Image (cartoon, rainbow, N blue to C red; front, side):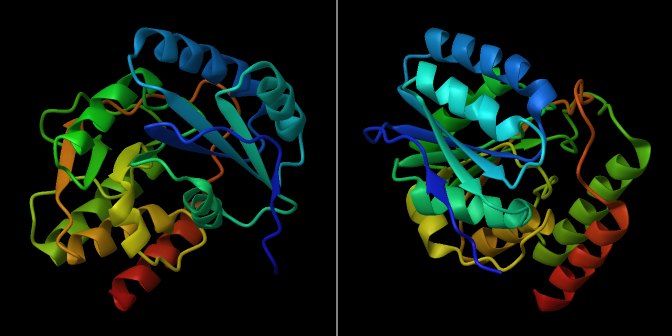
Length: 241
C-alpha cells in the first residue's frame, strides 16, 4: 500500500528535529505537549517537533492540528492508514533536515526532558545516542512484564550478534547525527525497525553512546506492541542480519 502523507505546517530548519510517531494517542497528548513546552523553555536549543500520525482512528490527528496552529515549533505529517512504527520513522526521517535528529515515544515512558542531554552527545561526536533501560547503571524498569522480558531478551541477542558493549537495541528514545541516518536503509515497518536501525548503524561503524535511563510505566492509553508479531519480526531481522 502506498504511503501518502500530508504536511500541515512548514518551519525553518532548526538545529534539532524530534520525530514523534503517534497512533491513537489522543488521551496522552496534552501531557506530552506540556512537558515538551517546558523542556523547550529551559533549553538553549531551537527545537522542532515533527509529529507523524500513523493513521490514527481516534482524535489524535485533530488534536495535533490544533496544537500546530498554536505552536510554530510543531509540524504534523499524516499517514492516511496505519503503516507501522518503522514506516512512521521513515516518513519522519524523509522530512527532517536538521543536523541532529531525535526520535521519542509519544507515551512519555522515557522523560522528554532528557532530550538535550542526548542531542549534546551527538554534537560531541557520537553518531547515535540511545536511552538504555538495560544498561547496568539504569534503575529498574517499570511496565508490562512480558514486554520488558522481550525487550531485554532481544537486546541481549543483538548484543551477542554484534559483539559490542551496547545493552539496549529496542529503545526509540534516541538522537542521531543526520549523516548517519541518511546512510541507513532499513526495511522493517513495525517495532523491529528500532533495532534494525541500530544494527545497521553499528555495522557501518557508527559510534553509539548509551545514556542509562529508567523505563517508566505508560500513564495513558495502551501499548500498540503485539508481542507475538514483535517476536516474529525480530526473528526475521536476526536471520537477515
